[in-house]
Length: 536
Image (cartoon, rainbow, N blue to C red; front, side, top):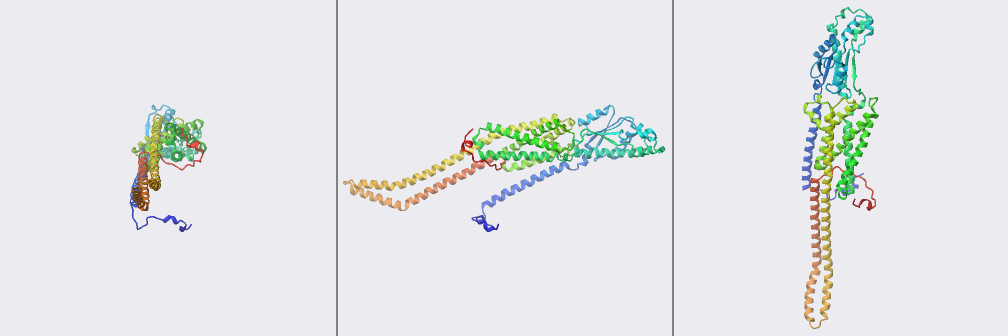
């Protein structure tokens, strides 16, 4: 559509060649927000990228327990291979005596309790079985290369990281150990091999067997600690905005007792988060692709995500209550980024500074979910659940206090607005009374003149007085009434202007002292006034 259809767009507007205080105020505020937002996002980018900085060089913080139940040439080959691979980019192999873990089940328990990221062990008598197999004959045919070296690990624990840092590196170690074994002729029989069966054994002396506590290979695992958390946070923000819009349209804070507002608001948010969390859990289960999790894990995941969603609803509400309006978006995006950064990587692969992520509920909810999904093999509930409940209790208390705060300032605004309306009405009524009095004054004067004319004794004196009065009145009527009307209208205009400025000042003070949060437009049907105007 052509521009000339919008003729009013340019009427009485400030042009390029004109200057006003409006432009100065605009650029001052725009520049302030320009600087603050650039600094904020620069800091958030630095914080997020810093947690991922030189991730592979922190791989040595991944500890793998190594137990040699064999005590022979294979264990020696593993140790030799590790010496060649050891470095910042390779997990630390912690040698443990067989007495520390008498049976592999004890080593499995240590991995399950997260004392180690994994456990690597060489089976008892593995070297002697390999030596017999290299001699050929029936021992070579009966030899099982998967019963030599076993890796115990939990793939559910940061699965995308564990695949590389634990499994891939241990497979590399197993291959390097095979090379070291062949190079050193560990059993002393390599030069005497003659049978085809023995050559087959020599070509593949062992395969790294996996004892995966919770296989987690589905594609959706990549977003469990990223998009799932982000969408939960955004989901609560949008419903909070819808609730605030409804409260504003119906003027709930000015009409309903704050204790009732607080209870209803709590129940609404709890119900919303309950349904939202079951939807999130349902999607995880719908796309689990054979992942070995059952109904019990579903229910537990649902409850934990419900707690996490509700505490975030309350935390975001607290931001909107206690922070000035311009800083609420900054606080929200900072909250999202810091929460997600706390679970992008295990703390072993990030600089030590990022252990402050223990404070954020996302880290604790993810640790709890890992424990649920791997059936207790991430036992950090002793601190994860208390931190989650602490966030929930504090945010609920501050949010409840915020209801009273909002109700208080809403009533102050209502009283100020009612006072200003009353003053305007009073001023308008005074103006009308003045006009009525001016209209009645000539009639009263004429009545007094007629009454004086009937008095014969004082006719001339009264007539003179009347003429004098009439002359004075005539002068006033000729110019005075219009001037008086103009004066009265100017007084009324000044009163209205002063009250409008006072109203703006009160609104600024209200917004400075109390923030009513993000508010999205909510359509409210025009029902009978008894449905919306009555006080509860």
